[in-house]
Structure formats: C-alpha cells, structure tokens
Length: 103
Image 1 (tube, rainbow, N blue to C red):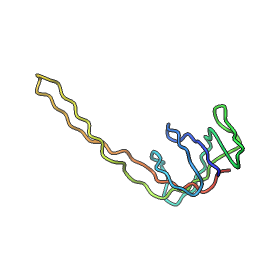
Image 2: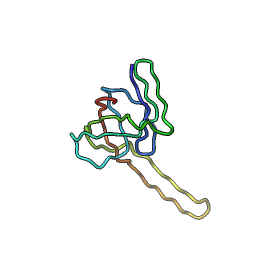
Image 3: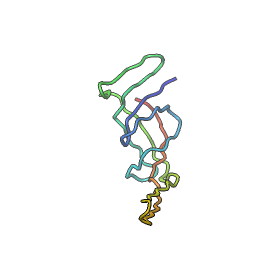
Image 4: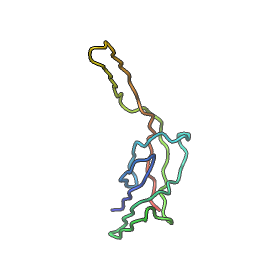
C-alpha cells in the first residue's frame, strides 16, 4: 500500500493513488493534469521517506475533476443590549481531484 502526506492549500492531506479528494480551489480547468511537489512523507512498499520539510525528488500527479462549493457555514454576531445582530453565510470554493500516481 502506497500513500503520501502532502501540503496543498495550507492544509495537509493523507492521500492514496486512485482515490479522489476535495482540496482548496486550484485555478485550473477540469481535465487538466497537475503536479504537486510539496510531498512531506512518502511510503511505498513498506519503505518510508520523510522530508525536511519536503521531499525534493518526489511529486504527486493529479487530475482535476470539477470545481464545487463546500457546505454553508453560518456566521452570527451579536452584541447584547445594543440590538446589533449580523448573520452571514460562507461557502468555500473547492476543487475535486483524482490522484493518478505517486512518483
């Protein structure tokens, strides 16, 4: 079983080839193939490599499937005794990617 831990969009993800993941928005067209080179840890066939902070020679090949929005987050602010209420909503832009291979 091969897997990797990568840094994408300020977050760390534990990924495996052949599975899809929702990352922060990547400004690219669906169908494009991208290389992610911030690999923090790589494990293939029981051999584990740890970067300091990243592995230089390894990268992840992903395919962008589609762009979507995350679930809605409600922000509600209130100041007591001042009759101030503020209700806002936010939906994060996400990109669904398929991990093709770990190199």
